Image (cartoon, rainbow, N blue to C red; front, side, top):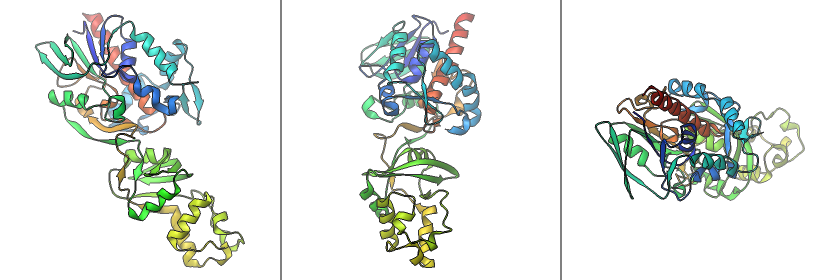
Amino acid sequence: MNKHIVIIGGGASALMLSALLPKNTVTIVESNPKLGAKILISGGGKCNITNARMGAEYFLGDASFVKPVLKRFNEKKLLQWLERQKLEPVLRKDSQYFCRESAKELLDIFEKEAKKQTVLLNERVNKVSKEGDVFIVSTNKRILKTDAVVVASGGLSFPKTGASSIGYDIAESFGHSVIKTAPGLVGFTVQKDQFFFKELSGVSCDVEIRVNGHLCSGALLFAHKGLSGPSVLDASLFWEKGKLEIDFLPGFNWKNIRNSKKLVSSLLPLPKRVTKAFLVQLRIDDKTGMKLTTDELQLLQTLNHYSFAPAGTFGYSKAEVTKGGVNTAEIDADTMMSKKTEGLFFTGEVLDVTGRLGGYNFQWAFATAYTCAAFLKRKKNEN
């Protein structure tokens, strides 16, 4: 088994797997003209590689599946591996590790490693089947026969980078169930009552969002289509439909506002444009705090728990990741191999595991690749 391995995909998980496996044992099949298209645009072009705060609690998915994979190749081991490759990420935003200059630093490492393998670019996988112990990988250019197939094709987000449903199609063709997919780490569109948000496009403020029992904090950005920003992207992981609640004034002390001679637009720690927009919606004049009525003060305090139902999301074209995917109950967490078909593996985003904003999805891509590589090397040595 595993004399040769075909990896479907040329993204983070596929490239890490290729780098960890012995020379001349892998064929990477990538539909794009270049490897790592999504790596280059991630993190604003600087690639948020991982996070100092790591654990299953930062992921949407089965914790019993996520935990052992992360433990096997955690952020410390990843940083050590990168250091051996002469890349030392810098710590930003308290706990997030980024490339020092640009994402190209990371991609350069992977491209160098990929040279020891066979790389097929501009080649699309159409179908995978199995005859006896041999997998048949049909592309738009050739037929590949192999002992093992690793599906590392990612999800549906950023279709401009070549994203497709091929990973899910292959999984289903081998009898796997695919948990319903949806855009993740993405902005929200709004309904008519919140159309005034669009008039605030470009303005941001720090908020706390509560959605389905989860708390997401950080910057909220008013956008032309609705709401975006780190806190909103995080919240999108846990939102399916219905209402969520935003605290636009986290930790604000209302105690002395009634005695103030300042205007409300100056009293509230929000950009004035935001405060004034809410005053219009609440039908409150921009008056001094001491002139506010009890009813008006109560209305203002609803900004601590502003509840509304998004109309939807910005969709896959703006989503950083895909929620849902191949059912992890059908995958062995110790090997990443299908429990239904020997020699068929799934790694990275194609699985039903999605990390929060902050480097978690790259860590997942690398950790699953490490688990898969360790098993494949072990099996190769046994043969």
